[in-house]
Length: 270
Length: 299
Image (cartoon, rainbow over all chains, first blue to last red; front, side, top):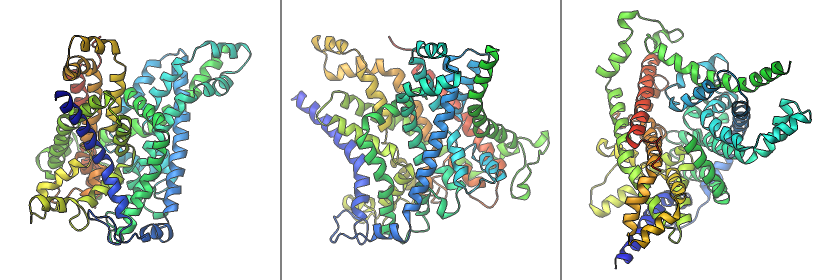
């Protein structure tokens, strides 16, 4: 009996988790096919108007491309510059080394919203306000601390002999890094890259304050617009939510173990 | 010669990241601290002015004495911190303990639990905004089923709006659950086997063996969750826009509203609130690390 109750309790908890995690998205998915979205019922007639309008009149492909361009570019820049610094700090001895790590670690305590006005004004001065370049610039710098600690700890696991051999063979420091270390460190770099990409793909606050023109907005910024501008086009709003979240969910389902590893590394190092 | 080469290499490799750090973190942080002591709003929005030592704390004094929106934001943010600690962390821990027994479907449940954390919180916000809508949502419908005629309108009623925002994030501890699970799986199975041989029940194993060993990770999870509560912005911007009657302001939402979200462009006041948020964050992390003794391991 006690065993049965314990089992029952376990499945009850799991059921609650499944409902709260899946049902809201499922509800939006079903609603997006209704002529009048909402309510608890299944659609009487399945309509695809919402998807038609967002691909034709709203042109969601454009926002999708913006998101991809911004997230991919900033992820590459961020992982590249951080891995350079992380490599030097993992491998070389120099004065002020511990200060470098400390400098990056302090950023974990700086809330993004609190420092957003100076960044906003700086982009204005640089002529980068309302540009994707400006957003890429901000994303490349945000979150350097977590990336730094993930990549650095991966570099520390690579045996030093690899580089020493390369150096004896006459490789320069630069060639050693790009030809020997980067290929070996790929798993660590991709762990960091997934996490950075996910954050940049989903980022809403800076996208919403920096981008004003519609044709430059990322998907999260577009979703923000729905709270006011498109609220009459309900089918469009529900379809846009689905188009925004489904790619992430599909990629996650395909690579769930890799994602789990990234999320764990990110939080623990952070 | 060789040393010089090496020094140049070190500098070349460190420089991009340091420049980024200076531009995105160091300069803005210094800037908000300095300008929080200045006058800086729509009257002089190109150049902050220092009002003299006698008035340098005016922004802070106004925040805490005159500004009701700030007080609302501060109180709500602190409430959300407490709620993440007493609701999200225990719930996540419970789920992790259940899943760690590897019941059938545990992996699927774990992955499903992570999904709300990896999709954009703007999307989550918009989804909940619709769920709460009286005309198309389901919350009103469900409430009417239990209390006929109640016609709850979560977003326009200041009694419910705070809880509407809260429920859009408070149970979503998927990522934290993974952290706890990973830690539980790294516990030496022989310890648990030994306890079982001695006749300990599953509940006793959870509370007497697993939870003490898990303490540092619970501390980490508490810091992450509480920080999320303290910094809450996206859900508010998407669900309530701070309303009704500014009852769902958070610190972050206040900061946004003080300058970029209003015509008064009160950058100085917003930056002062930013400094308050920054300091609160540090105090919070410090307190939680001390409480959970995160940096000491049990074994």
